[in-house]
Image 1 (tube, helix red, strand yellow):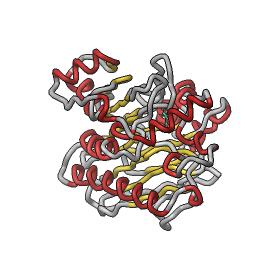
Image 2: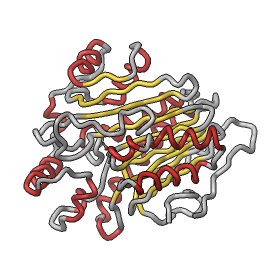
Image 3: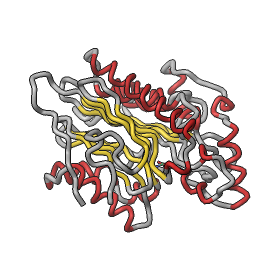
Length: 341
Ligand code: ASP
């Protein structure tokens, strides 16, 4: 498999860069109406611009990651924040994590039901507590104390996610978003995942990564996936890379996906696209699939996935937002290593 990396180390200005994903899954042109495609592209672009605005103004990679993720959490299109999927009990239980590459400080929340923007809560855990992960009610109490916006759980209710749950219950299945694709009766908007993530490089050479999700439709018993697990769904280390993952969470945890990728780069000096592919191959070998976005401290990046598509985008120093959804490279030169063969 070929893997070209984008290198933007030439020039005098320190590079800034932001890469985002909005989930990987069975996403193809035939399944996405032009209206839905347009809607997704628009939010992805808004997310890139929000993060880039922070970076351009001299803000930190951590703040850029937050700005980018908040846009996607506030959109009902993605399985994070407002558009989160339902658990078996009909609740929206949200997970999120963030990590700073300079200090390797990290924060995460899991199974929260009232925090409007879980990524902000993860950040508060990282910066305002001596812990890395808070869950459930305790996390919500902490978020309240930190002055974060608390909403009624009904804020997260969306009709199509509710219908998705009813169908999953009827079939007695736990669904990743893209699994619902097998039901051709579903509108195309149901036919993909929507976990969101971002990795950023600021002008000081610091990396950050963050991920936010509603997890799996029809999940039970307090199930938590990879997204809030540092080293599985999220990892950032200035010595190697920042990584955010999306996919079959259980397998990403078992493969320690984000750390695995970073460790290959740091210890084995594996090129980033190859490291991501190695990790995805390990995941595939145990029955999982999904994608990874990876960015190093020089601004080299890759967006890899072994599913049909992945919502994704990149913005660099020139401020031009580039968004892709499907497997093929859509803008020549924009997405140098988009997909595994
Ligand atoms: N990784 C997420 C989880 O398992 C789901 C996804 O990325 O689609 O919770």
